[in-house]
Length: 113
Length: 114
Image (cartoon, rainbow over the protein chains, first blue to last red):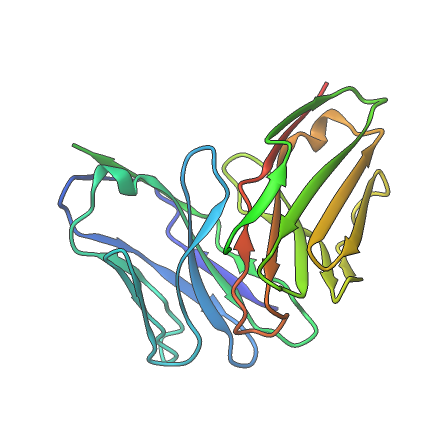
């Protein structure tokens, strides 16, 4: 079956530090990959996505590249801000008759001023 | 309009109460979802509606009863819940159900069962 493994954290960084959150996956077929962010007390927001190998998703300074050879979709940001403090979920959708998003366990990021 | 809205934002209910959660989207999406999220965990899929028909029930207890009155609305009827059902209930929608369709989530209803 499908699975997503991401570093669980928590991750604590100082403002303007470089961020990497690792995500690897196991899936049948050709899944689409997503990063969702959940700010405290809120629902999930789609941060970025990639639908095929070598695609790079980007949004709000965050980037992730779909690497089929390493089955990875690591999230990066060059300079984090306090407002980036949230839980980040890596997810995949392999489609077909299985409509499910398969989520990683989530990574709590705290950015200190 | 790219929003999924959910009401109420918070709900406290006793184990003998009957209540309903509501979800609405006006993006023309044809798939809608209910998820349950416990603290510090990822969302768990409960139900999927595709073209207003129930497509997936992830073995959810019958005290949770979904309803899709039309393509924009999704309800979750609650009856005789247990304290362990306390969680954040998230609604989501997507254009379709293929692998390229991202799901858009609402803000959730935080449910407390006493």
